[in-house]
Amino acid sequence: MIKLHKVSKSYSGFQAIKSISTTIHAGEIHGIIGASGAGKSTVLRLMNLLEIPDEGEVEVNGHTLTNLHSKELRQARKSIGMIFQHYNLVANKTVYENVAVSLELANFPRKERKSRVGECLQFVGLESLKEKYPAQLSGGQKQRVAIARALANNPQVLLCDEPTSSLDPNTTAEILSVLENINKSFGVTIVIVSHEMEVIKSICNRVTVMADGEIYDTVTIEPKRILNTDNSPKYFVEQLTKDGEMDHA
Ligand SMILES: Nc1ncnc2c1ncn2[C@@H]1O[C@H](COP(=O)(O)OP(=O)(O)OP(=O)(O)O)[C@@H](O)[C@H]1O
Image (cartoon, rainbow, N blue to C red; front, side, top):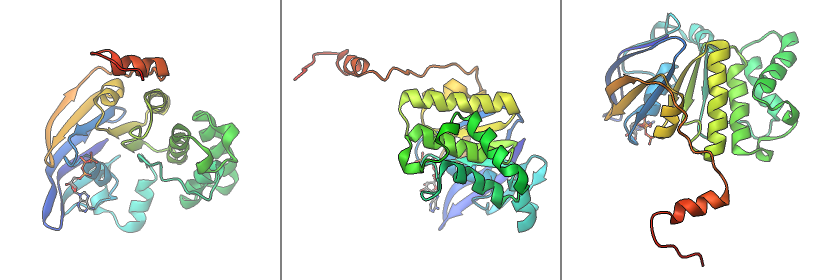
């Protein structure tokens, strides 16, 4: 469970987040949607203290992060994974090494690292690419590596900042399936920031709508796959030309 209690954040006098209070329930897939600049990414980054609030409390899995000293905070953060729009992989490390590095940083028992990396890569369907470098992968494959890396330390919470915004609809659907599997298989609570309504409606059980640094509303929904996954050139031409006159040349 994640609880924000009267959390505020300003940048050079500009109040980006205005005394927000909310609860994300354990086991849910929670969406955060809103216009550009509404404060979605900032709220997500406040949940693992990548951004330090000016005021208020952040509680994750029973720990009040805002009360912890740096060593305790490092420990508590092991149970919070995060993935990003641009993947944030280490360019000069292989797929295997990118996942292994998060285990090293968390002092995961050395003897068990290799098998843990293997398990995570298998879960995201990338075992056969473990010797490749990020530049040799597609966007969807890079995001799978990032997911495997986030999974490695058995997090209870996975924070996802626009995880599909650089991907085509087909690959978006695949990544959403991976996230859903993580939620169902391991009970991981997922918070997903997106400006794409289709993504939010496809996967979330509850959604927070943000505007101007505040929570406008929180709604409960029934997730329903509404993503179009047709990537064919025929479909693109049909979509471009269906509402009027067309010119093929
Ligand atoms: N590090 C920062 N320094 C200064 N201003 C910031 C910083 N981070 C965020 N902001 C400002 O805070 C506001 C909220 O930003 P945030 O990135 O959280 O919005 P968002 O809803 O995620 O937008 P987008 O969909 O465009 O990513 C914006 O006005 C932004 O310019």
